[in-house]
Length: 163
Image (tube, rainbow, N blue to C red; front, side, top):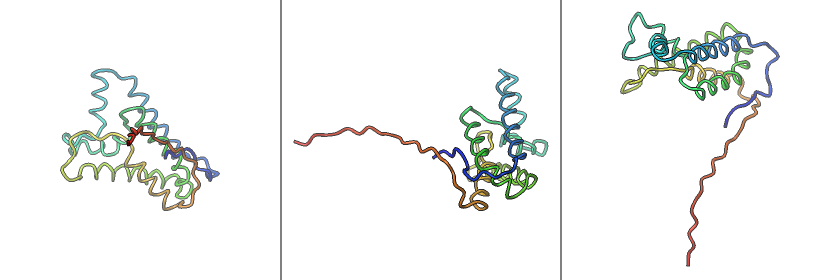
């Protein structure tokens, strides 16, 4: 299921949600303008790389949440933020919503680093933050009415005739 819209959209302008959407989109748009060494230097500077993490790179625990790898990655994260963010922001207020988002991004990055076996690749994306927003939406608005798209996958199965 893919969420499309919150049918009980709050009557507020969700400034914090809109700001986060704009920040992620702006960073991704900037990423698209980079090529070659410039693109690699940008990624190296801002993503959470477990092999290069040190005191001077702790900022990447948060900045990696604004870097996305592909169109599908950013579109799915921003869609979930757009659908669930305003309801959570309305219940918590803009400043607390922003704090929740950043705290969940940080928690997601730390969980990634401390996962058993250890990570081998750099971390990018807002999935930890978005997961926190989804959890808050479930707690704060458990009866929200959502419009969703249900994708059906058809798997062809061979038919055998018995004689």
